[in-house]
Image 1 (cartoon, rainbow, N blue to C red):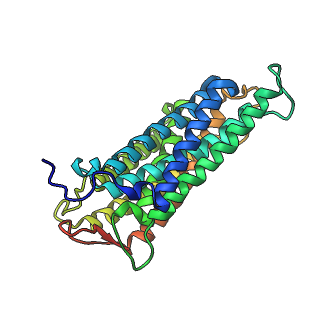
Image 2: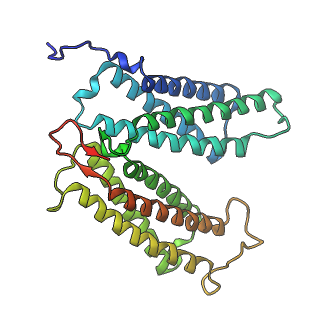
Image 3: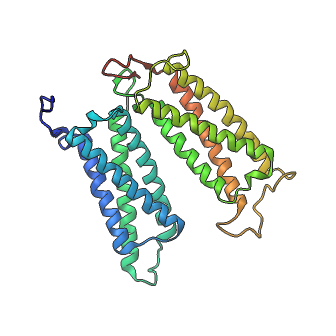
Length: 310
């Protein structure tokens, strides 16, 4: 017999603002996937990315909703609140990217050869994707910690949400590095790649430890101090990479400050180098903001119901 004394189904999974946001995510995700497979269509690497993002987020939302409605999450060895807000924040970023990439490459003002139905369906896909972004953003907003409030997990704080954004930006950097960036030409650019990989690993480690409820003492220091030390190290490393990468890519001694005229569109190493440089500065700013906000986070003992205080 199950020792759970209450109802097996969680009525708050439906009758609550959070439940309504998740139902909207499911409905809009299903609509997007149905319209793309029915008429809108997709092709090339950009289309595959958008479809993969929508399918992944939809599958993740189905799993989260099912586990929450049936209370089966209580049998998982994870911090459910930390896990769900992390998934929602990641899905928001995925939907934002897909909502920009899909209309940029597939929506045209004129009707394509297949007729206006295809264009109209693609516009509808874009609208539903934007609404899906708002639905996932609403879940993040509902779970986000407020100043002075005892929260259910570190990932609901500003510092925790910034960790998700930092990891997502790092994935964009890795994608640009893999797209003919020629990073192996100089020792300076190789150093930058090592910095990006090391910082991403540290960020992922903090997220995994939080979700898996491993927030006790780490290396003879409290977890909040460990997070601050890691963040400070990441700020210093990203600062160095943000300076070194442009020097070895755009200085006339090593590269070109201007885009070569003979460089093919979509296959130009110079474009990838610009993307890496821009998002290096973006991630440096995110880590700096994380360092500032992490000073305000204090963890409560893991034996208590709450894991952190904002």
